[in-house]
Length: 481
Image 1 (cartoon, helix red, strand yellow):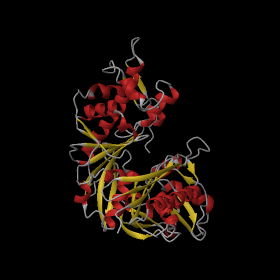
Image 2: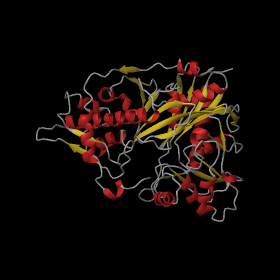
Image 3: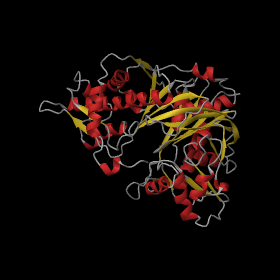
Image 4: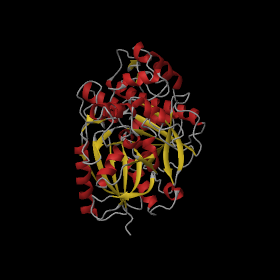
């Protein structure tokens, strides 16, 4: 039997198909842009039918070029919402992206009624779609996050399911993750028959009948959980941060659920995966801006011609000259969740150079990473010894050193910059025997590099800068969403 796994990895703006072998090596990958649209401010939509066509086409190409695989794994952006007709398989409206804020007012209404759901979760997006496609709730429709839609497409409509890691961030599950919440379903008028079956993250789930050879679909994980597993974080206390557009830290807690939905330090309880019915819990901390700050330097300020130049220019100076940048371009996430905070550039003098400003931006993102570590350590009641990282910013040596210094921990760099594909491959491959157990997955970890802390953390100076950035738009700072 082949030891290869086909992975379908759907991100915010692209579809990625990869083939991973039993040595945890990425043999080949294909990528296709699928940019969302924004029909109005705060709205983010995409065409689920086009996404399905791209998945079929790219997966067929991968199998034609690489040969048969033992299983298929799926990783996906979480919270994005698709609604389709069960009989025809056709979407009945636009797919709504996880960043979409059209239902934020509804979230506040529900909060006042005692039901806490976030605008980045699926719950109110599903209600919005149902109200337009099926106001009387009489049609035979299927709801799913992107993993559900991909499984439906690959199975030719035989599979309507989602895994526990994705279901837990829909806003529609009970606190323990064991069933759908009757309270939420009633408040949003969501019929149970529209919901997918909730299955293990790793296990043979059905057949990808739309693909040559009909391999089994055997693994599904939300993108951050896939990245966590892809970086071989399987034991309590192991953690990773993905530095993409934003930054997300996930830490493994274990078999016992933390005693909160949102912790005192601003993290959220997540299901990292479910295997053979057993749930592994974790917590997640979020910075709303990371790589987007580099785009700002490049596209809006014109200080650098490309992302790689942020390291080149920053390396021209030894430090920031006590210039501090708070990357609150979209507000602050963990720990304060201040949506009214705004980006701040402090300490500028007549002698401040472009290199110092660019370096201050890299240091600011690194300090936000350290904020996530501090928050997760408190809420998870654990010690994070080594920090594993992936994402586009991990190719920047100046940033990585700043992160190690701010977090006061060694930083290990993932061998694959986007570890989601490895995580989905591990989930599917473990289900069909390519990797025997968690010990085998842990043994695959071979970091591309390790950065040791060597400088002062400057955390007090950083916290003072953050206080200057907070509460800039008081009415947004007051929002609790």
